[in-house]
Length: 90
Image 1 (cartoon, rainbow, N blue to C red):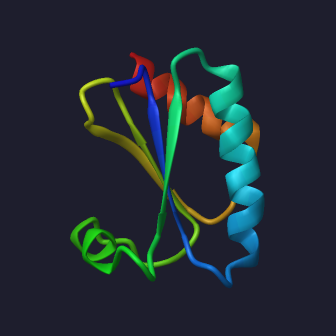
Image 2 (tube, helix red, strand yellow):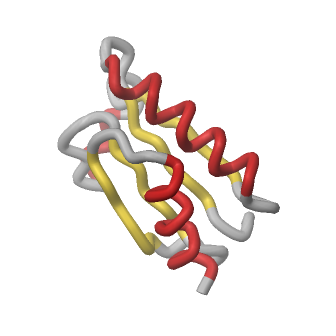
């Protein structure tokens, strides 16, 4: 697994999801070894329900072992995403 993984939960008609995708993409570009996986809640309803995703966008940050270290709903900025990633890297 990567050093930090961002899971982005989106939906097709979610305007803020587009901005959040750009923010997380930038964070991945800045963090060596970081990855992003995007899930469309309309196509992955079982996964979204199992992870208790209640709104889009939602970003889950996972450490190298796959443990969730941070979760946020809404649209973060790059600085917020980098701080969350730092927690996963500890």
